[in-house]
Image 1 (spheres, rainbow, N blue to C red):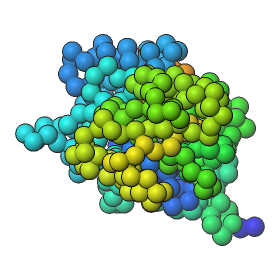
Image 2 (cartoon, one colour):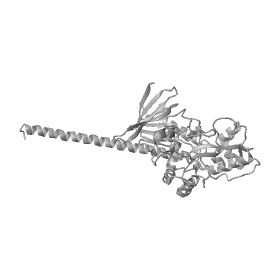
Image 3 (cartoon, one colour):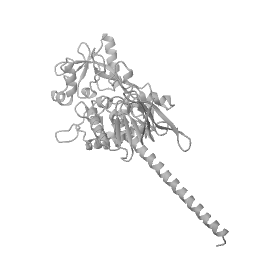
Image 4 (spheres, one colour):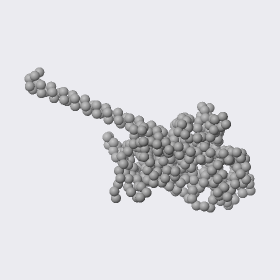
Length: 432
């Protein structure tokens, strides 16, 4: 079978927020190729409802740090948590400059909501489709780049290996397959895996079915270190239905704004603002005690105006399933939601194979620990995708500088050798 070959400077596998933001932070002089396994809108970044965390002010640092650690059972990598929190405000400012429309107060300031396990409101949002708002704008920015090409319905099947000047093993790009089954080889100095999570491997998940851990599988086949592969998060509240397919998420912010969980008798049975794994445990035990397939989520304590403006799409989806959240509770059940483990990376998103990077849900940089704090996912993906781009630029500059120095040294060597040759001839001829 013939193989089409593309030469690039950077290849990015995945078009969620991590992949897109990495591309946007690379120099325009570099040729960048991005791959989407299916269509660009089938990524979990599009599905994020609640919002994105941000450090409100310096007084919020300690509580933000502690909330992230407490949710993660104190198994987080402290350096990564610190980096994410301190980079959050510049990231939000950059998103606003790129056109992302976060909710505002009457005075025009950013509006903040609260979610489970947060000690204070620090989450900015756009209705209940924050992920779609951010990802759509980033995608439009990437499509406007003269140096970037997006290939849809193109699935990575392997990575390419080679050797650097010192003989060390390095990544040299990827192998992929297009929708027609054609083989594609993309050669690149730097490769970024942003392939998302593992939800497609589960019967009940909020993820798209195409997310099957491709990045982790391929990395493992090449001996790249993986980390905490058992760290899988179950989200407490997805809309219960007998219909097959992806589970519809009922955002954490619904409980943050006052929605409560009820048992079959209409009684509240837990604190809804505990970390996700704790609330999921309460729900599963309640379901077991009642021999039920779900519990109930009531919006009776949420202001009608909040429902109409903040949870527009949740209202619509529930109505399509036959439930009116303005007048009745809805059935909810836990489902697989997020993957905290993955390809081990350092603070610059580098894997253990040089020239191979990973960002977003497919990697483990230690930010989340054993359980992710609500609305840290978009932020983490953006922050560490930017760090990957910065490292790629530094490596490129170092390589270019080394090449120029080597060329200059070679030129000097030739000049000196040439000078000696002239001197030798002159001596032989008796001129000197």
